[in-house]
Length: 202
Image: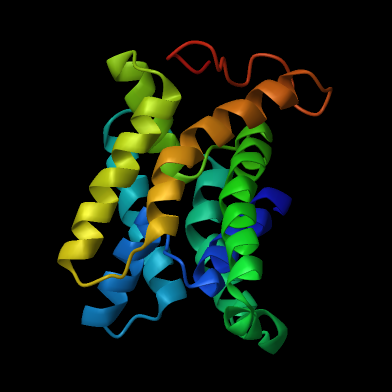
């Protein structure tokens, strides 16, 4: 649950920086523009669809997968209703750059926490992990490819993007890998949850 909340907080920091949404959120915003869904609820809808795609490819969902699909968007909805957070978008550029970097950096440990809990990775992470296993390509490369595909679809739907989008697409994979490596050095994650150095999570 902490990992899911941390992930939602990272998304909100990116949103309020006004320097570019993450690729998946460019897609979520594009969907929200063409449907009655809010930004947060579009996140839920996309996550549920990705969950079923990953499942069809052999990525078995767990309780954590379902929780991710339903709660990240709900947390985003709640966080964006807090005036103290929404006012951050009016901060000076330097502060918004710091929010952007913090938002991208938070996605790494957030992903490591909820994947490491071993209740099932989130929908996008399940797709990332099953993609790495099937292609035998590094997690960072697979995640980056998925992010870029979501970005293209989001732009086609009219979602907005900026320098923060590029930073996220290039930086999120290495941040996740680095977070897994750091957690492997602690007793928080049971050994064997994910083998980061290989393309085959266990």
